[in-house]
Amino acid sequence: MMVKLIQSLKVRQSIAFIFSLFILLAVLEELDAEGISPSIPDTSKNIISASIVTAQLAGALPKLDFLARVEPIKLSQITSQVSGKVISISSALRPGRSLLKDQKLLTIDPLSYQVATAEANAGLIAAKVELKKISIQFADNSLAEKLANAQLTLAQSQLAHAQEQLEQTKVTLPFDAEITNIHAYLGEYITPGQQIVSVLPKANKHISVPISEQDLTHLAQLSLGQLITLTSLDKQHQWPSKIVSISQHTHNLQRNIYLEPIKNTPSPMYGQYLYAQFPVKGWSKTLMLPESVLTLKGEVWWLDNQEQVYRTKLDDYLIANNMVYFPQENIKQSNNNNNHALLFPLASLSQGMKIQPLTTDGGE
Image 1 (spheres, rainbow, N blue to C red):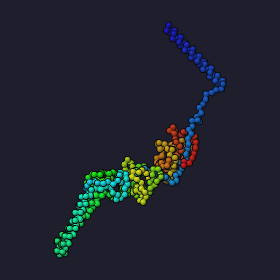
Image 2: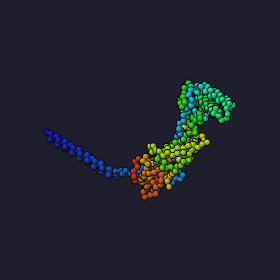
Image 3: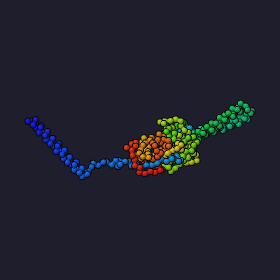
Image 4: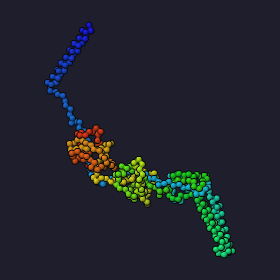
């Protein structure tokens, strides 16, 4: 019974297969009679279109802008020269305030120093009287007269010292400066050498410009005293400056170049960020292209005479003003002299791919 069932199924499958094959042959014969043939895909539609730009010889190379910062050469401390209680503080003494030389900062109680000055003055008068008596009683150049003269000199020195200490109870700014921190307060008792305020001297600043070793190789020869233009971040203000030192120490493949604003010009503020413009050395023949031709790997895709693309890696180049500059010998062209590069190259490009150029401009 089972064998007959299997045979019956095989017969049915064979009949179904033959019937399907017959229908297929009939359809193919009808299509052939009507002249319909399978379509061949148009490969020409797979050609990529791309904008093309021509590399140009660069004329005057641009200056490179590096971020710079105005920094103090050193932080100065105003300290007390005498001891005593702080009895008054100037209303102008505030962090961030820029004050002029001789501006009064605070006052230390002068009473004890006024007493010391008065005593020293009295001692000076007594020494003068004693010298007068000795000069009458004893001969010139006697030991008594020499002693009286020495006591007079001592009294004069003591008075000068007392007067100087009395003057130092009025703490003033020794130079134009900006207040950064206040360390003494009203009613506090301070001692000699104690910090009163921390200040940034106006004439004691420089501009620090960190430059990588790679960027440094692109710059023209730098020298001390060379003029460098500083520009505000919004490009609205400029300051002339000069190179005062070039650090020989490197950190994280960077070294600092220090600039100093030229005197008699309004100088930038402490902590302000600026652009420092340095001249570029360039190459014997420098080409330029829009920065958008460059891939993330520093490669450029070129178009040859057969409108096929190939790529070269720029071993040496610099970017400024949205343009990429590189030596002409950096291009390794294959059997053509064209300098046509692809703008915004696609990641899907491959060597020898056919490209339909859209536009060609001068790369300006």
